[in-house]
Length: 470
Image (tube, rainbow, N blue to C red; front, side, top):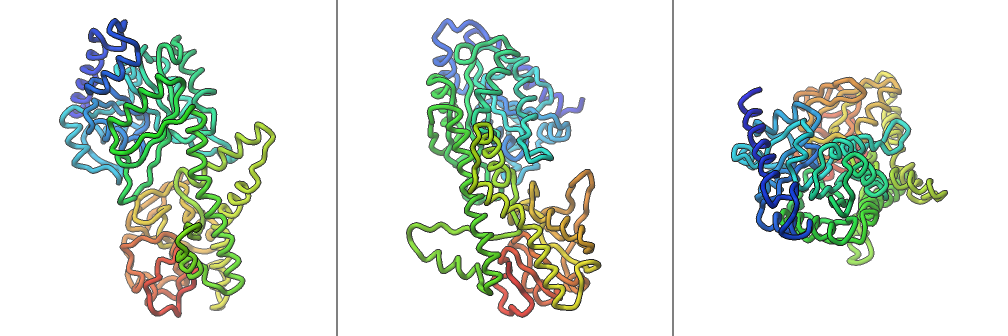
């Protein structure tokens, strides 16, 4: 074990010792109810916190809890993430590297893969992935696995909160029975349980974990008060409570389904405008002048990220349990899922105008991140565009200043190290799939044979002769 790991282990041992101290929730609470004890520990910063999953949601949350004065343990099954955290090495863009290093050095934050340390914390937040499986069905295996591990070490007087996106009913129908059966404890009497959806928007320069309003739903009023008090002590934002975990779970689905449906609408209109010879981007700019009743959404090569492309599938899957079909939602999902293939079709038509078939053409993809100016490629439509083009026989390369390589389907693909006029001239077509602000689009338009801009990233280029918009 290296020095950083030794220090992390020592910190966790101290937390374990603190948890067994008189008056803590691990012992009989002679000075009040479980709620009173936990509220006091929150107010006095005596509560130890665990965060399961140290990814885009979990690590920023762990950092904020530690910054607020709560000694925090991060849990992750990936040894490399544990090692990096314990050495103060940052790997998440929304985390300030200096904050992470300072918190680790001071002993306020540590990481481990050993779930036995769950027994040394009073508050556990589950922030693990909830992807779709190969059949587009919810994959809750990470949530289930986390709940089983927590249950093995859960002590009386602990509050557990699920933050991972899930279908309505997950907290009460899945998590609660697993915790009760695995621990022998009773929810509401021996431990508290709730749901508080993450609202992470990677790369957002205004809203971060700390200042984004939080929604809390819990099983019972006491649990709701304790969990809300914990988030209020950590965040510089409002905490809004709802009557149950199911309401909070549905609220999260609503947030992202709302965006999915509206993006599906604008993508369909973009395809129609293509047939009509109308610039959809100009249409949107004109519609934005209305001061009420309109919110702009923009077309693109598809949907990316963890939430927006996935959440509607969770809802439609749950709805089918009741014989209900979410027709409008499913229609928008079909439109958005079709966009990568539509981009490939449009690319083929552009090449045909120059007497070149898609098969054998050299195409440069500009940007594989799912949104501009971040290094996150989860569910990125650009990767699906590449697969569509490759499937049709095109030869593709990509350039992304934030993502030098990516892994997909067990294969690692390397991007170009730079973007120069000479490189651009070597391709039959350049397709902009991510609107990174650091790319010189004037240089791209000047040197590329032709540019298919699916994000209106080159809107500032004056000479539009070699640019076609989605």
